Image (cartoon, rainbow, N blue to C red; front, side, top):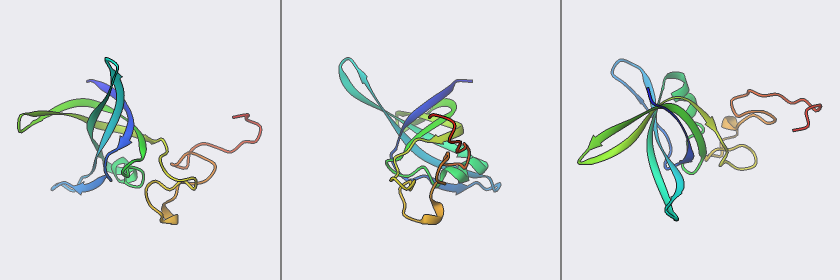
Length: 130
C-alpha cells in the first residue's frame, strides 16, 4: 500500500455518486503546486472518498477550497494519459472559505462551527495560549 498525504486546492466542487450496490462515493480533484528546476509545477490528483466521509466532504470540497486528504496512491490510464488517483481514507478542511467559515457557499446552516475544528472537534479553553 502506498499511503500519501495530499494538501492542495480543490479544482471543482465535489460530486456525490451512488454505486449500483448503494454505496456513496464523493469524487473531486486536488491541485498541488510546487517547484522543480526553478519553475512552478502543478500536479493534479483525482480523489475518491467513500461512505459517510464521502458524504461529509461535500460541504468542504468546493472549488478553490484548501483541503488535505490521506489515502492510497494509484494511477489510472485513459486515452493514453496517466492520471494520479487517491482512494482517500480521511480529509481535513484547511480553509479557503470566508471569515465566517463558509466553504464556497453561503448557506448558514452548512457553516463550520465557531471556535473549533470544522467537524465540531477541538475545544475552547481560555487557559491554552494558542
